[in-house]
Image (cartoon, rainbow, N blue to C red; front, top):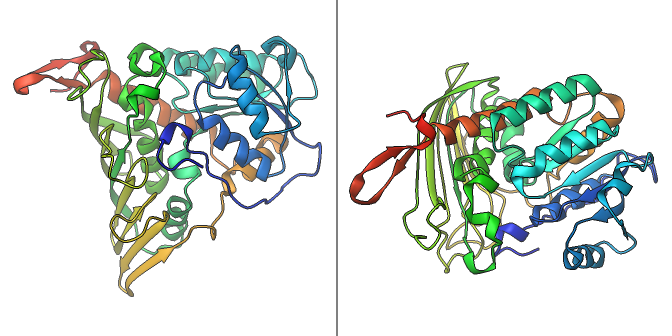
Length: 371
């Protein structure tokens, strides 16, 4: 697992199979983002059987098959879609095309599991909602910064246990290392990736909804900027937003591409969760200048101050729950509406964003800003 490069960060956990051999067969289509490896790792560890892969780039397929020996390359996407033995398609193709593949997967009777951002426009979400209602199949979204981070999962468990009372405010930070020279061209095109608040902001908004138990929220203010990547004029290297949930909880988050070279991982992702009876700080990937390991959690409540190191102790329950949800028609891993609502709100934040320009000037993005 590459801790220096977020694009190829693929967590591995303990094997905790929820199904027997051959009970849940899945395929990978679209290898444009390295998150596909984390997605497949999680499904395999939960008992899923990865049987085949397709991508138009043979080099990507070769590397994928080296990582997962025994996986057969398919001649085409259509070969996989027409294989009735395959129950789910996992994909990390270019974000703007993710909804199209999802529609095709569901039309062929298969569940779909896509990397975030699952959508770049709200119209895409509406098409997905209608297709899910029509077919009864799952459209899962890989919000990895909560689902594949043990300290983030543990924070949710503590909240459920009442450790900090009612959650009333969350602060999230999602810094990333740009590694611009190694990025594909689409990475710098907001039409392809959706913009910074749509893309990496999706992690932040999903965890806010989860930790607060909110069903919906309103974007009060959002802004984006290109401070230091002028060679890519359309790229956004900074974004932040403020939201208020339908239950009164509030949220501020910041995402950026400014991880310094001296940090021992690709990003010092954190969450600070305030409750009526205490607070939690999650240090997801590193505890700077103290420990190079991740999954640190700090809890302060009426019982005192506690520090937990939970790497290897909590596991990644989402993947097994998601497999069982696909098989049983349940919603234990994540409700479909939660997955779609997080996607919808991050697009709303993106579309309403103020663009911060040189000398403090601002302009409105997509004619929908919120000055």
